Length: 324
Ligand code: SAM
Ligand code: SF4
Image (tube, rainbow, N blue to C red; front, side, top):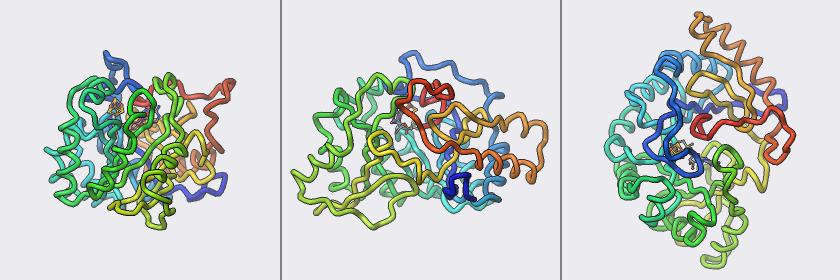
């Protein structure tokens, strides 16, 4: 359906857990966060009901995220349910990749359409510093296993001077070496991310063009979102840029979000949200839930306001709690 700004909404990001097996410095504190109890988070059956109603309004694509979605037990069954029973055209996953090599085959069989793997550095020591866990090899193994079993892979990298500023081209070159696209996602001033200065995507594009020649704006469809892709000679896949900060893209936003505790969020940066959990547990019908979603979507905010200090609806929770 179209929202109040005439934007087509066909994509829902669902956070299925607030737990994680890494502790990325821009996302979580070292000691972790106080996790929600089992009862507080939506069950698979409840998620299914929300997706079914969203499907009635034209949502066709689901991204599972978290926390780390692969730590949620039986995620494979959830993917199968969303593909086969809720008839979603795409069910994709954003993951840190740690558990992928073990799970890729089952995920593929369940109908997972593609995977985004977050990887900010290719240097082992740096990886251990950024994620507070020494597990770079597991992520690379996970990426390779996905390629082997035929799950399309996108690598997501958040460019920050002190994390990876000295080897961003090396990360981009994963798209030269492997059939994976690489996307640079500007750090957003949300949660712990506020402490870090983003490297603007234009700077990275400049560096890439210096080394690899003029970038060609891609006309291939790589994803569902706001990334702009370029092709470089000799690369197997495109390099994408998501410039939430330097080039606001809210006018083309196609998504809504569901937090793990059942809040429907219309914008990443706004605190707003409709509590669907209570309605679900009170036994709301599919029809009524569809109407609740419709009314909420019509009120989707026009844009984020990252640098408006006075905004009183600003989201104050960490990314791991919202579902990045
Ligand atoms: N654990 C999974 C992962 O790391 O892909 C899924 C959840 S994580 C919150 C989703 C994505 O959000 C990751 O790619 C992470 O790098 C990104 N992220 C976290 N905090 C961010 C921030 N302040 N700005 C931009 N991206 C951020
Ligand atoms: Fe975990 Fe993803 Fe946050 Fe890193 S970015 S701490 S992997 S949720």
